[in-house]
Image 1: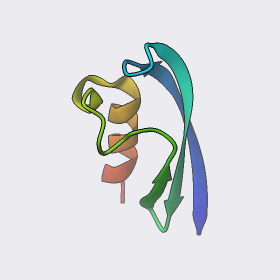
Image 2: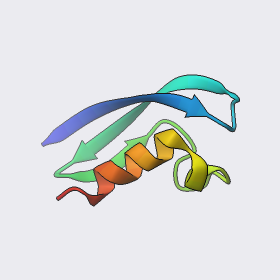
Image 3: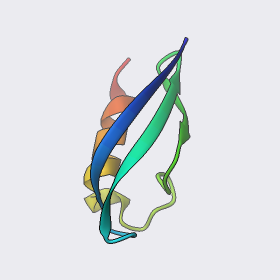
Image 4: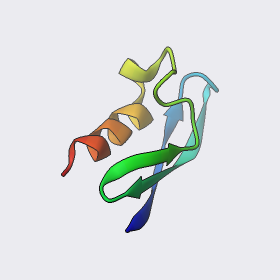
Length: 58
């Protein structure tokens, strides 16, 4: 089953707030409409932390 989540927060790379769409299929992330996974700021990113939280949930 495909689920969409929307996360709002500050993007350091863009230096602005933004809304990020995360698509999950059977509980696993299949799409993210930001640089999650390759962003140099990911460890400090509030949006990235929320996305990681979705990944950890079964």
